[in-house]
Length: 66
Image (cartoon, rainbow, N blue to C red):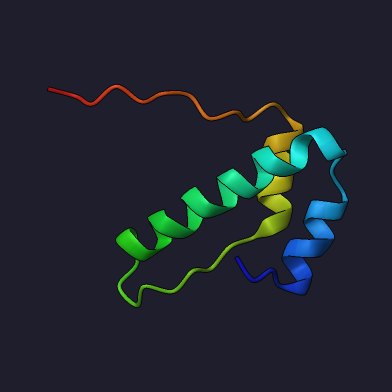
């Protein structure tokens, strides 16, 4: 993944053990943007994602609804 300056800045604000979690969240967020926006642009506020990771966000297995 090519990282923008904003991405790099937010990533650098995190301790090393959270960087992989942050990048996983970025990828999921970008994929959702493509699915849920009419122009399919990947608009990401990396500082918000860094805050979510810092506050404890972790990927959990999602069980599909039946």
